[in-house]
Amino acid sequence: MRSHAAKREKYAAIRRDAGNGMSGRAIERKHHVGRRTIIKALASAGPPGRKKIHREPAALEGLHGHIDAMLQANPQITTAAIWERLADQHSITVAYPTLRTYVTSRRAGQRLPRQDNDQDLVPAPTARQGSKEKRHGQDQL
Image 1 (cartoon, rainbow, N blue to C red):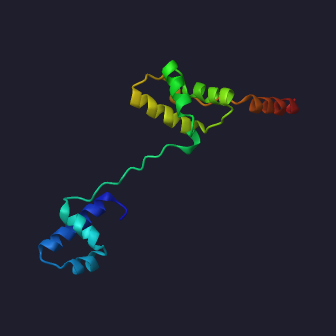
Image 2: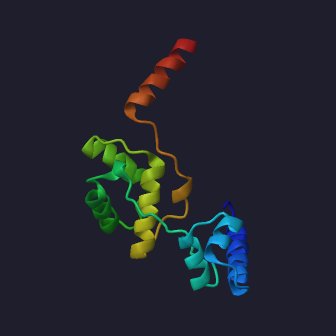
Image 3: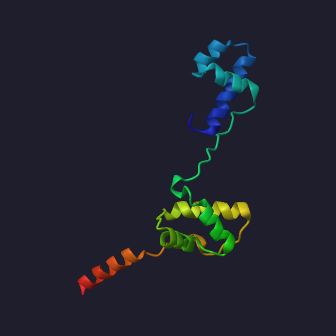
């Protein structure tokens, strides 16, 4: 099933056919479903919702404590500043969107304020990237 609406319609049709006295096997064949789906359709008015799988990003493994400490020490710290500190102090590079997602979720859970432009910030190039760009710019002169 692709849409939730189509699944609701199929569940209603299963209930309707069962109410009309159709056997379980006949319902299975007619609607191309298994007995568990028929049991679920008869037990509830609508199909169950999708389960949300909650996973912590593996890229931040072991960094949660450091990031949380930075947020507690300075609630106004930007995601870009946290990203830079992780790179400078811990020599760890993390994908910026992964870090931003974690920081946003922590702020929402702790009700920490954030700077208004935190989402718009892009991490500054590292010293290595900056020197490479400078050399490239000098080659053009």
